[in-house]
Amino acid sequence: MSEDWSKPRDIDPLADGRVSIDFAIAIADFPRLRPQLARADGRVTGRVRFGREQGMPVADVEVSAQAELTCQRCLAPLVWPVQSSGRVVLVADATEAERAPEGLEPLFAPDHRISVRDLAEEELLLALPIVPLHAASTCAGSESAGEARHRPFERLNELLNESPGAIHDEGPSRRTR
Ligand SMILES: [Zn+2]
Image 1 (cartoon, helix red, strand yellow):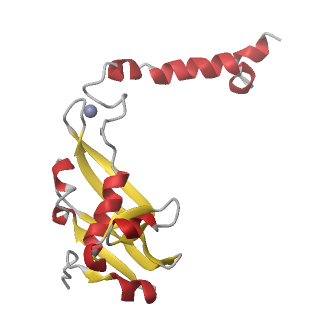
Image 2: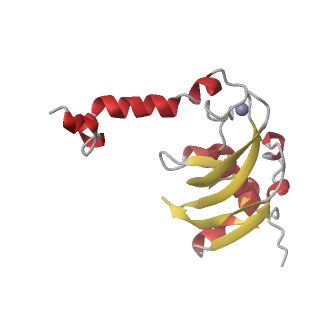
């Protein structure tokens, strides 16, 4: 079954019917996301649930994906797991945006229509880091990557110093008593 997730749908009947739509969309099919990806591989899965808040149409969007980004320090690929959800209020113009319930992100839906893909993409873009970076300990471009290798031993020393009793309960420290 292949569904056209980029097809705009009429929002009002979806909101009135509190319609819930499960989706699985190829990550390559998100035009605004693509430039941020090192590789457009895999799928975005999730669910959109429509409803109303203060009379206005809203959508609760859940997305799950493994986005392959580019580390901005070493320029190597970086897999960024996305598991995100949020609620948007769907507005057709600036007047509607002004009436939007407090604290809700307005999303422009021309002619009160929007596609599932556009809803999912908005949530994905919010979930991605502005500057993706590997953790310092694993990034080839990080100066602290070398230092990080010593850390397991430093941590062990800390443990030994902090709680000698716990670690040497049956060990040499007992003999000194
Ligand atoms: Zn890196």
